[in-house]
Length: 364
Image 1: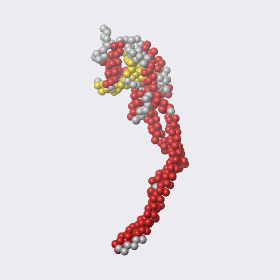
Image 2: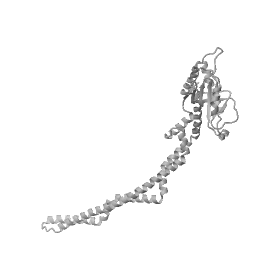
Image 3: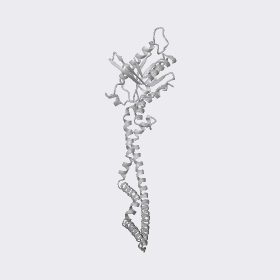
């Protein structure tokens, strides 16, 4: 089985994008795609759940309102009886003081003051009895009124109550879809890249696959023929085999996408990568950074072949320096070429390229 390094680039892009937006509940691209396909169902499920929640709330409110009504009546009776008992007690004390026959002036004055105080308390209680009872049960009455209003609102405006209840969950769901849609191209790109990786895994273990191979350069590498300053290269798959290196760019494009003038040509992209990689390898072989068995004729070169693999539609045209294949044609094409490197040499080339990929940035 082919040795594989790194996740596919589009998958990394999708994971990073979702992570930055605190979306961590997907374990695979298929789960993301299923979310997109089932969005309407998921949205309706949220609404249905909140319809049941509001219905349950209405039933609970009905029971709570009845309990509060009984509690208010019981408390009113209790506090009214308590205040009337206090009135009776004050009345008896006042009567007792009124019947006092003391001849002592000081005592009479004291009794007068006490009677005046008791009369005020008694008058206050009698005049404010209803207010005092109402105040004593005001907390329960407020709860009763709030729950009654809520029950009436749910009964009269059930749909509005459901919409208010599910608003936060719906907004979260729609925000998640919006975030995912921003990387829709990468999602379907990851599907195509995964298909290619699964196909290449069928190669023997003397083949090494590096996914999402990326290098940047300072200063830029100049391509005199194209008059192009190349600051970085990126390729979906870099396959190192005993027959050479295959640069593989994967596109999960439809026929409409193939005809679009807005999409950047993968042919130009892969040719730029080929130029840089050939330039690096040629220099590093001669400087002995990549150890190949010497031939008496001179230094050996590492062939670098350009492949574009299309997982959906394929153009009829042929392109110079780049082979266009479907996924089903990929292995047959790679196996067509005869081996020219030993396993040790293949490993040496792969190790060198892996090391470059780990460094990411090169100073020329």
